Length: 120
Length: 490
Image (tube, rainbow over the protein chains, first blue to last red):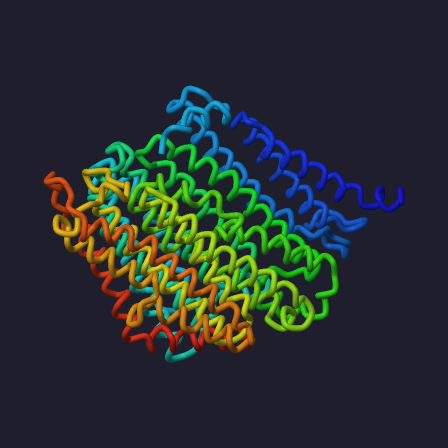
């Protein structure tokens, strides 16, 4: 059992990080904390993708004149794109929170829901 | 030039999306003109592409000349070409509509930026349609989602930023699930090209990895298309977005999500696995779809805000599309594909006519619509045409797709789905009748309504008229979707 966990520990960590992020998204009332949770949630996926590119004994995928075992660079390249997406999501989310703060004067979701209860 | 058309319909609006906000600094009207130019170009390009598909078969465009599965492939066939034409046509209609509507509803300083984001949203949707690469699909999905959040938050109402934020949180979780699904499929097969995945996946369907990948896709796309019970972001987003954005998002946003989901189900996983190995999956979706059709309609009845009513009605319409997909037989699937087309037209007409009423008045309550039938005859007739199509009166588009869905249910021996379709339609009759009753049969106060500009009225009436035209000349969409079904079911 222990060996099974240790042999694939990065995948376990990916799941744990993801659940931490997911918990923050669901449970936290503060909108900034929700964004932090969302970022953690997305970051865990980066770890998964980077892990799957690893090849035992592999080296950087640059041709050096001799035959060698290379790691798979494709997941890394994919994750560069996903990181850009993650940054953009965070940026848009912050912009929306600024707007929400200007509108309601608070970023606590409970307080906002209390305020808009009587709106339509 | 023409051989690069598949990529040009994406690239030209993408480049113009960056120019629009800059040009808008010289004069506000330039940003709108650029948006119109971009959407018109895409529409003409899409029609040419569909024409080319009809006469010389599917087009496979290799990005940068790299051969798939190594390079990114754009695929234009009967299915993607058809959806591309719908989306780009509605984009043109909404852009014409948007000029006055947006000027009324959005802060003047924000207008140039609005059109930039608006064009990016369309680029994202069109990219999702044409791409044949699953990771590329994710990137375009995020482009359209991110801009969608921003567009919703641009609404004038106080709740708009909050609606946008909630959409962002739920949407990002959904998109991340899709990314995970892509990752799992990549681990299982080592490829990202959809057709290549379709060739490599059979034989791997007992693998837990592939099953989990499908589960991630199913949840992720259910969030993106607002399938019940993951629809919670949609009503607020559609209600508080500016009118033009509601019309565009409601008609194209979830439809393109459904299109991608259908691609994943039939092109990547293939129909055989659902018929032979994962037989419970279609049943599961049939139940969810039936519940969505009923609950969406019931919730729509309870609404007093007309935009929210239309939003809940969208939830039930998504149920129809998924019902057709989950039937997994040619006629049912054709019904689902037809419903993508039909619902796009109907919802666009409905939201644009609601936008016509809201112009300068801000009216969104159903109770305030009393007597408007004679003050705003054209937009109200357009609304009625859209409403009749939704209910599924013969000679409207709604009838055609519901007919195919009913036939598809019979084909599977699932006669019990027909009462669900009928009851959901009757519930639609209930909530639309409440609106139509207020519009035409109740006397309103003598307040004079501001005139609706022709630039808003014409696209509304044209799209509404198309609901009737394609209901009568139903053979055109039926022929094209018939070929698309052949393609998807192999």
